[in-house]
Every structure is written in structure tokens, then in C-alpha cells.
Amino acid sequence: MRIPSCLYVGVVATGFAVAAMATATAAPVSEPPPGAVRDGGPIAEAVPPGGLITSFLHNQVTYCSIICPLAVQTATTAATTIQRAPGTFAAASQGNDPAKALGIAAASITGPTSAAAQQTIVADGTVVAPRALNAFEVGVVDVLNIGPAAAAGGPPAAVAAAQTARQDTYTALNAPIVPNPPPTVTPHDAVQAAVVAVIDAGAAVVFPAFNTVLTAAFQAPDAAAQELAATGDPQQALAAGLGTVTAAQTTADTIITDAVTRAVDDIGIATQ
Image (cartoon, rainbow, N blue to C red; front, top):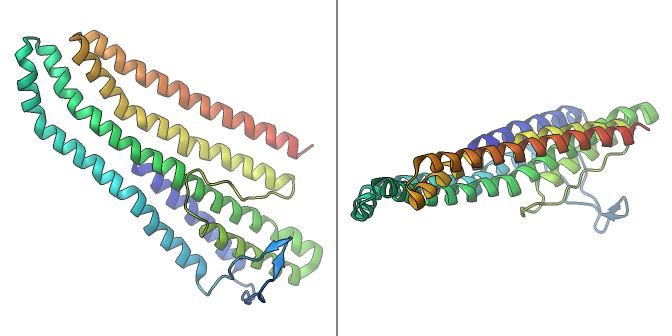
């Protein structure tokens, strides 16, 4: 549950560092006049001094406030159900089927713990990960705009592009926190499209594929426990657990394969 969030920190830190280095020599962004527009739409709130750093740090606190209580709840659920398991086993043993009683006791732990863990994983995968990925990609794409701007318009154009990178990254870092937020990154040339495609492919491995496997780490023991509780057959219980692991691995492989295929297709389209 915590690994994707830790990877998120590294991803965003890298993107923040890139944007910060690119904009280090840029002139400060002045406050836009009321009602000013850029690219046909209202200009977002101007970046205050230190805005990228404070936004990054604020996000860490915010994401922890989303993920950490759920992770604690998962651990608490596991500890509480483990303490109650002996009593559950004793009550179930009155049915004179020790294997079923063991399954019932085990399921009393694995079921609630798996459900609690799933809430954590879903929050990480639908709220934290996509928002982090978008902020990173926005920063990378805008930084890639600086070189062409400098080549076309010299230092003034480079400074303007750096200011845009700073503004857009700040806006992405402060985007609304909602499940499955729509991406706002907009590649403008083949190189940028290819870079975004590669990042997306890597993110598919880091987030949805990994979270699928992580989910199975909780669901497989529960599947085995539930099967043992229902049938009292250890072999069927083992098969149920292994089946859950196999299904998760197949799903993760499909996610990765589809992401790589999509990246190759996007790069091919971008470079035509």
C-alpha cells in the first residue's frame, strides 16, 4: 500500500527538480492583471515566491491525510481480528469439522483486512497516482518547450517558456483532488508526445499493475480462507488462493502489455 505512494514522492520530486532547475534563472512571474487570459482561457493564480516548493510539500501532507488513515485502519483491522480469531475458532469448532473451523477463523481475519486494504489501494491508485503523474508530465512537457523557444526567439523566449513551465507546474500541483482526475498535459510535438507515451508506460507498471498484484496479496489469502471455511478441503483452498494470484498476474501483465503497445503506437503516430 505504501510503495506506490513512496514512488509517487520520487516521481513528483524528480519533476519538481527538473522544473525548478529550468526556471531558476527566469524572471519572477508578475501578477497578471484582472481578467487576463492566456491561450484563450483565464490565467491561473500566479505562482507566489516559493510556490512550487510549498505546493509540493503541501501535497505530501494532503496525500498522507488520504492514504495514512486508511493504512492505519488496515493494520488496526488485522490486529483486532487476529485477537478475536481464537474465540471465532472455538465457536466454529462446535461443528466438529476442524478444517472448516480453521477456515472460518482465518476468514474472520482475511476478509475484513482485505476489504480495508482495498480502500487504501483504491485511494492510492485513483486519487494520488493520477494527480501525481499529471503534475510530473505537465512539468516535463513544459520544460521541453524551453529549448525550442530559445532556438526560435533567443533568451527572452526561453525566459517566457520557463515562466510558463513554472506556472503550469504550479497549477497542476494545485489541481482539485478528485478520483480519476482528467490529465491536463498537452504535448506539442513528436518528441513531447513520445516522452509522455514512455512516462505513461512506466506509470502503468508502477501504479495500476503493481496495485493489482498488491490487491491479490490480500485477496488470495482471503479466497483460500473462504474456500476452506466453505468446504473444509485444504487442496481446494490452496487452489482458490493460487487462482486469485494467477488472475491478478494475468491482469497485471495485460495492463503492462497494453500500456507498452499504446506507447509504441503513440510514438509511431507522433513521429510520422
